[in-house]
Image (cartoon, rainbow, N blue to C red; front, top):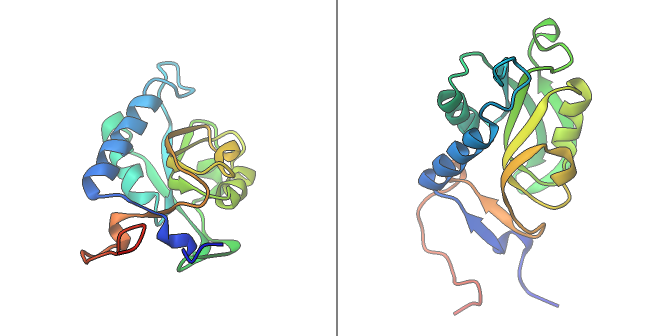
Length: 167
């Protein structure tokens, strides 16, 4: 048995790292859309975590139409019921054809499962993926273990942290 809390196996992501990894995601998605030239019709960012990567992917791929869907599944560091709080116009979205859905992370896959039910023909891309969620995503950049907690720069402040193995 370990005294380690689940969030103590942390993977800290800096602003520079999320930018580099989001650009790598864009490069991986370039010319892979269903458009005649491999383009994407639009991006759907899953708020809040998907907003920064979606902005970077949109810039890199010159996609001007970006919408958001607000899905809540975490309450601080505890995963709860998945609820869609706000979604774009159904007519705009259709079945998701040509839509690139972007999120920062797929963990259990429950958030993407809900969004995939709404837009079954969309392409789902995340910057980071955990094993349980990988089946729900079409494209990702970095895989991390299921027991790793990712600390994103928008959730962090600079302060001292104890070493992984203690003092």
